[in-house]
Image (cartoon, rainbow, N blue to C red; front, side, top):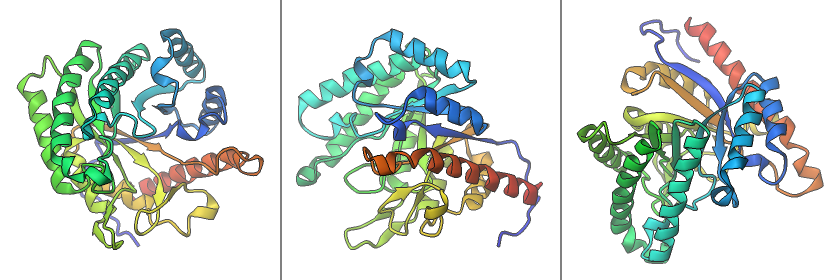
Length: 321
């Protein structure tokens, strides 16, 4: 049971949001906007999908108008897959497409008046794992260019997601800090020409090796990102970070994420965090895709998860008020 502590000021605001991934090809954005408004959650992290990078500007203008009509703010854009990982392998064609699509993602963020866009770094081929150091350096060189491009487009931040395995860097606190420090220093060296760099962390990400031994637990990893934290993903997971799920009633017992503990850790470390408002986006994988008996579960799972996260915040606030 958490002890009551009153020895810090609450200057950090934690808001709840939703990442749009689970509705892909299953429900419309209008459906999601209505659900969010009914649950009193108004921050959307727009997840990418197959057509995303090729859609015309008019599509995104309509999307913004639809969201605003329900009081929803598209406050972040973030990849839903690993499609911007072309710099972590030696195939130049993939790197060229990554550059083109990353630039388009930034342009879309500007169209939506969204201050931030981000992605994971991607994945090194397991059979070419020796390319990893070169791939990381190639990505860093590339993202520095994008920090300049994003500034020109009117954005404020680019974010990167710390991941859970060696093939998907960064995968531990040491790498996270090294990458974060380099990109933070790059911004500070030319603040008028670049956007800030930050992490879109995930409360459910930790690092377990091939023997399923946890090398770094999710809480330590999450805390390590705080000096660079801009936003984070809220989802549940198991003890070796094998599967992720939400906070619906049937999933709570198998999950390890203590939501009140997450809120507490954020508030206790708020002086380390470079922003005064952090949005935690429910990143729900949703039920089995494309089945009549499973697609219908999504509404209940989203509602129950959002209600649970809000209830936990209310209870935490009461304890520490």
